[in-house]
Image 1 (cartoon, rainbow, N blue to C red):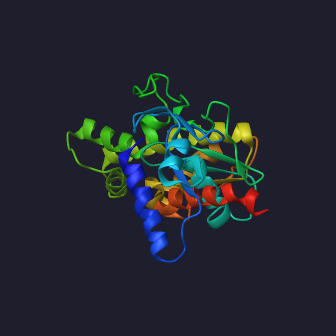
Image 2 (image 1 turned 45 degrees about the vertical axis):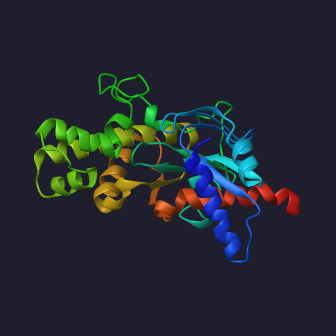
Length: 266
């Protein structure tokens, strides 16, 4: 178990106790494949965790019940109850930043598959001859539409390092033809992914979060147009910006911990 996770849990528990409101449960969310029911992280490449019984191990360390969740699904729960998804039982939450993922909210709850991989639209292949993806395929949405992909593509074509995805967008708006081409390619790839998602689940609302959303109209206006072009059989879903920003994962983890106690409270 990560010493960072344990020390963070200790610090938060101590802070709550110091304020006179001792912690009664904890929540932790992880990127990767997560079995929420068992509290096992099946695969989290960025953390080096494989078949990690996080719920049991962290619970033994802090001696509290622990809810374990997937970061994007937990974020969807937070946006559903506290953010842009309030009042909407069925919608897709799609953060576009370091990667591209989705959580599908059905009846106010996120869909979780048996293998923990529901919503991985970042690995839909939209350009079969495109860049190689870490998953082993070529041309996944994530290889074109994620923030690192946009930045890396600009560096590859111009030789200029250290330019962020948001800077690429700003340069595109100022007339940089290379930046404009990369930005358009990213939005087209994302539109392909969102169109496929819409055809399968037919939601009327998609809540978009992550770094690229910060571009505002420069992100939403062309994406809405590209999505409408692809959905000839129905009006495009409403695209709206997530409201909780960088806090969304923490708030989602807290809500999962709260839900863990709900049966006992009832």
